[in-house]
Image 1 (tube, one colour):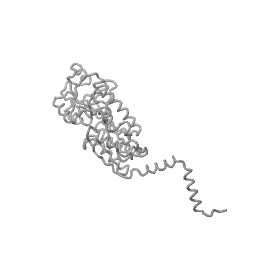
Image 2 (cartoon, rainbow, N blue to C red):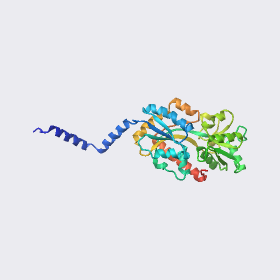
Image 3 (cartoon, rainbow, N blue to C red):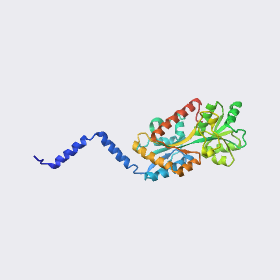
Image 4 (cartoon, rainbow, N blue to C red):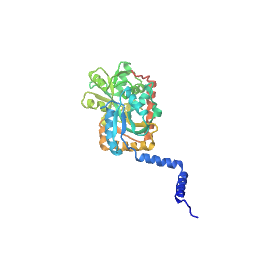
Length: 333
């Protein structure tokens, strides 16, 4: 006998089919749909440094390439202060929807053990999106310094403990911790003189008020090229193309390595499909010849990898600098 209510029967069949569909399939479909239309509005990239600095330049050039691939603007938002803590905390507390990102550096891993009361948890409040690039710091002296090699530094420090001085761009900076790692591994006592930025340290080095400076590769490039500083060694494990004739610290102190790095993170809980979408745009933008050449001039090497690799890399960096801070009894002046 045919149904007297064909429309009602049809609706029952549809409802039965929906109930028969496994819940996880429905969730996957919804998630895929959300990923497909992401991003649907501008993305905010927080840079916890002042405009015009090295991190800002790396971020803005990268954002230009990424937004062309994502089809939506990426707004670079500089939020400096408290040694990057202010901007970092802003991202930690942002919605985990993929629309707020953090462009950070080695400072994030260093602050984890150096700053006593952080308003966020580095371990649990962030997930990796991708590494951007890495590069060495450079040990420099003034041109007429008697120090020619890393061995000379060690000999001078051991013959005059606590007399040799090195300048940095500030307590807790990557160059400060780079020097402290050198002191630990070389077994020497060298006095730290922190400055409010690299400029003051560079001026005093050239003026003879300091013996050494560990500077960023890009920061000291023009001084070395202009003959106002002499590069003694780079802190990477291998020699770098930007300083081809300059040996590594590791050639004298085996196992030594300290790199500056730049990477992108997102708030923990950001959907993995959205993280993957941003990672792919990051990789394509960073691996263009123009961007790679721009960074190579500052001694930086592009190396993006996966979100998981970025998260693991951050954990390794946290452990590395925690050891240096603890064993070296490093404090923020």
